Length: 117
Image 1 (cartoon, rainbow, N blue to C red):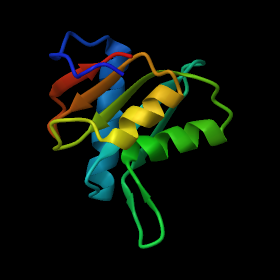
Image 2 (image 1 turned 30 degrees about the horizontal axis):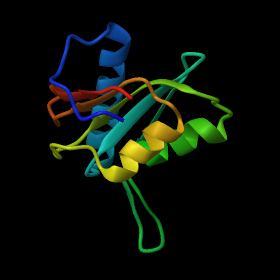
Image 3 (image 1 turned 90 degrees about the horizontal axis):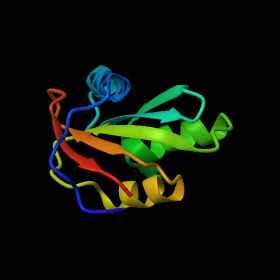
């Protein structure tokens, strides 16, 4: 995956992913929220998992939900986080799923970076 690029005008469907990720983060009071859209247009959301025996980024958890529902590919993903850079685990899972677009957004929903493979 390439380095984060400056935010660009998002497609309305990608803006929806940011909204879903933001709502998930707020609802759960988690460090991060994520939303992904699969090749059929279905969306999956998740928040950071921080248990003593299991730690997942929000994006890893959202991808796990998508894969467990038989998603074969992702069209896009969004992560709402305070971090300026994507976590290495997020880069890896996005690459595993050949995700063509990952949007990082601040807690207020403002896109901060867009990553393309």
